[in-house]
Length: 203
Figure (cartoon, one colour):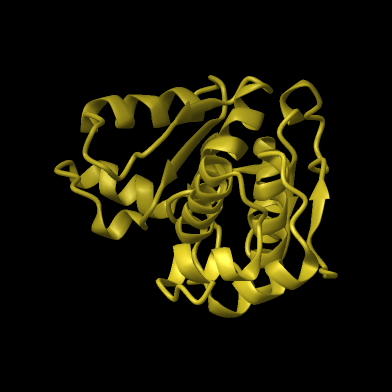
């Protein structure tokens, strides 16, 4: 199965932190490009938005290795408004550049400080989108390969046509297939996927 996506070392000076190969493709290429040079972020801060399991933490780890301050899950109500405001001020006043990660845009965050809301809304925002068909195939194949499998192209093509287009669903499918094949001592096949993922046991 061919794809425009690739197992790619990001086009940044990130080396030691790239032990886990990161896939760059249509859903995240703009975000990767925008994160490449924190020194051009206005006020030295930015926001990375993406759904669960989309690679936000991996990108954050790579940036942290370059000395960027990271605050993950900034939209989940786990961080004090004052702490976030001070972090933004540190970055603006010459501290380390700051990256916030979140699953949603700031307009819906539980923020009580009006000044913080306006600062968050003004941040440059880089977003990770929904996986397209090619990227879904890349993620499925690489996820299974990392678990020691060599999935046939026919299996990947079958899964791509039927699986929900979300990073979380892809990660879940990989985990389910790994468990099913390992526990039962079975090969990864379309009948196995049909039974375990879609409840259609025709094996």
